[in-house]
Every structure is written in C-alpha cells, then in structure tokens.
Image: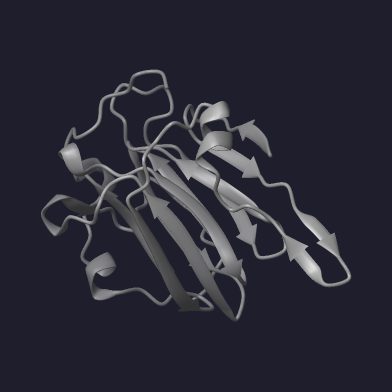
Length: 185
C-alpha cells in the first residue's frame, strides 16, 4: 500500500497492493492495522454503496458538528470523478477542490477527512461506488453545497448531468456556515 499526499492538507490517495494471476485478482480493501501505520487512525462505523448511471452527479455533501464524517472512497465497478472541496475556514486551500478519477481497474482509494464536502460524477455507463464513513448518517447534520456553484467552478466531466432534487436545491458555497476551522492534519 502506497500513500500519496495531495496539494490539499489531509486528502490522501491510497494505492492498494493487488495480487493477480490467471484466476483474477485479490486485494485488501481495508486493514485497520495498515491504515494506522500510515497515520489514518479512525473508526469506520458505516459503509455506503451507490449504483449510478452515466452522467449522474452526487454531491456536494458533508455533515457538520459532532456528526462530521471522514470518508474512504473507492469504485467497485465503472469509473467516477471523485471530488473533495476544502470547507475548513482559515485553511490555505479553503474553497479549493481536488478531483481524482477512480475506477475498478485502478484499485485506488481517496481518503477524505472531516472538513470537506464530497461528491462524484459517473464517467462510465454505470458505477458502483463504495465509501466507508467515520460517523453515522445524520439528516439533521447533513449539508449540501450546489454542485455547479460558480465560485467553485468544478469541471465534473459530464454533460447534461442527472441531479437529485436535494442537490439542485443546495446552498451556494459562499452561504455555508463556519462548521469547520482549519488545523494542520
């Protein structure tokens, strides 16, 4: 397992060790011990899986307060553009986003700690997306930022996106509350 730091403090790209032969492949998608050795010492409490069609955008979601979630994201089938937006006030990268293509062929994960809004777009005909969460879902603490906010200017790499009603009614980035304050991770 190799860890690559991104240009945004706290976001990590994780390349997993994959063992393949004529039968196919095997890899550990999560081993608490290995992640702790690399400084990701968190307790995952919930796994979420979504299946989405080409052009779907899900996000930008986050949870506030004591229900803030860290997410370990990966693609089971298909290909997505995974996006994390830094919403930690006083962060040198506040309001910046990081985007990474994840696919079933890559066996790569993205670690997104609390303090980021998260979303993804589907670049293949269908995608099954898995993410482990450090906190349970909380409707009361859920927040959504408008996926096509002009201040963020995210290139989702899809035309005519499929968007949920909740995501269409989201807040603008400049309207978010000061739920997270930056401290070096």
